[in-house]
Length: 131
Image 1 (cartoon, rainbow, N blue to C red):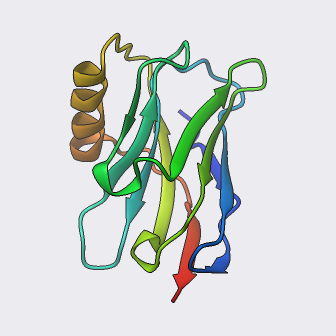
Image 2: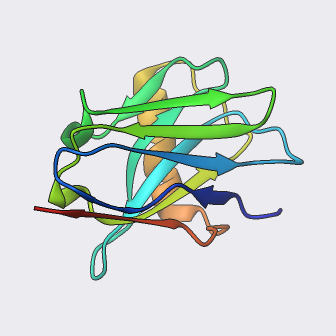
């Protein structure tokens, strides 16, 4: 399985916006998600989305500020990040597989499983938010 390719990370000031992209060319995935890692901490799920763009999952700290979306035709996953805060700083990775979720609890379970077992992480894209 070819790792997904993330892009769009940058250094911005607090309050700014970024849009991350993840290219999943060559494969058809169902559930897809964005994960974040800060040095010294475990990788955590930030947002996830099922095949038909519903349901979606957001970790509490990004609700109302981040929006996950997907372009199934071009096999691209996006993360629109608004009102960025310094605590959003980290390396952002995308992950996907053939699992299908039909509810928010189901998608949340998938996020937790991916945090624990996914082993095909790509290079990631760095997001740095300064105060």
